[in-house]
Length: 103
Image (cartoon, rainbow, N blue to C red):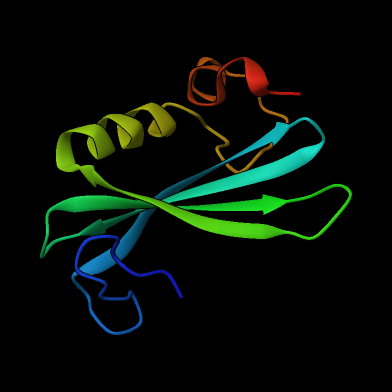
C-alpha cells in the first residue's frame, strides 16, 4: 500500500491521496514502473518505484515528497507520451524521464 511520503495517508484510506500517472521503462534488462501520487492535503507528490528484475527479486521503494511544482513537471512530461506503460517506448518523454539508462 502506497502512502504519502509526507503525511502517510494512503489511497485506500483517503480520497485526498491518489495516483495521477505512471510510466514504464526498460533499464539494463529490468522494467521500472514509476507511479506518481498526489496528496491534496499536503499538496505534494510521492513516487512509487517498482523494479521488475530480469534476474533476481523484484523491489519497490518510495521517493519523495516532491514539491507540487516538481511533481507537476513530471506529470506534464509523462503525459506527452501516448503509451507511458510501454517499457520499449523511445519517445522524447521516455528518453527525458529515464535519460540514457533505457535499454
